[in-house]
Image (cartoon, rainbow, N blue to C red; front, side):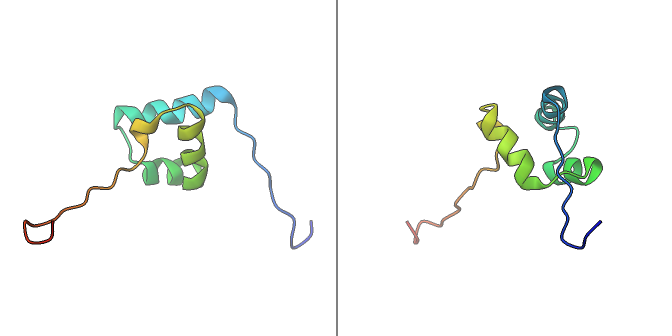
Length: 69
């Protein structure tokens, strides 16, 4: 095996859905699932977009005081 060879992983559809289900239940956070299954967080984000699960994406909340608005 050469130094620059990369391992290409292919995940099955049921596995992807299983990860998204675990994420939606709230059993684990996205970072915990990534560590548990050795998946990159960007890969999980792609699956969320692919299966139209926008509810699982991180949302940004902007907190302002009355002076800042």
